[in-house]
Length: 261
Ligand SMILES: Nc1nc2c(ncn2[C@@H]2O[C@H](COP(=O)(O)OP(=O)(O)OP(=O)(O)O)[C@@H](O)[C@H]2O)c(=O)[nH]1
Image (cartoon, rainbow, N blue to C red; front, side, top):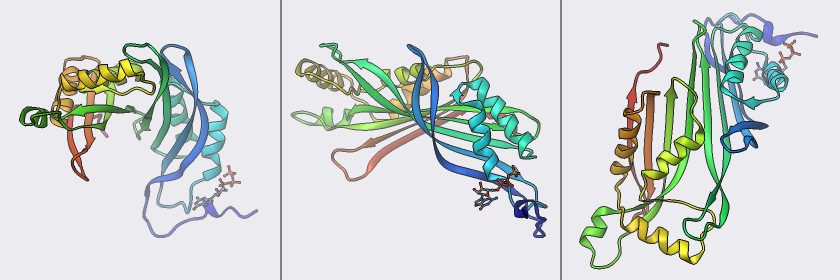
């Protein structure tokens, strides 16, 4: 059978990233409480392609994924990246695995349990020097109460749901749960899936007692991360879906050392 992918390309243009995108796949992720949890990921896998080749071998990406029967641990990630480079004759490899991660969270007063879902992502790359770069990302919904509105209004203050995206590079493994809890501690109040009336009173008053701009949220998170020796790099953003505007308020801070490319 003719192998078109292996034919020579004459345009002399290497490709930076080629591969598969948005492959839905069941995975198991390390879970701080239960050991592992099953979820469904959307996976992107890319390699570079030298200028002389017409195409990459798309089927091999899925074959490799199937072989490691993915339990998404940092160790497996490194193995997969190296395997991608070997099997596809590539100098660099890149994987992004996005998935909803579920954490059981109890309501603050009634202790009613519920499952919160957090969109998470692990991004991994291996460059031509076989250096592995891993980034862990959590997207955490929060409540924010506006400090300005509280100060100037005779009654109430506008408040809204926002989302904090935190990406970290680190020296030793960090739990997604630890990143999520740290972000939640820096919000006006955190968000729950189950709230009874006693809880609703609690989160309303807690948020009102703890007003924050998006700037306050990203600064409070940055302060904690900058004091943490384990974190070598981070990017944190906060987006508030303003209840008094039809647009968002947004702030972002990036700090730390990027790995050499
Ligand atoms: N490179 C490339 N492949 C594509 C594209 N569209 C579809 N294909 C894939 O072509 C694949 C088959 O090619 P290969 O992966 O090289 O399959 P193969 O040659 O039988 O397998 P190997 O012997 O392992 O190389 C299928 O998985 C299709 O998904 C495209 O735009 N570019």
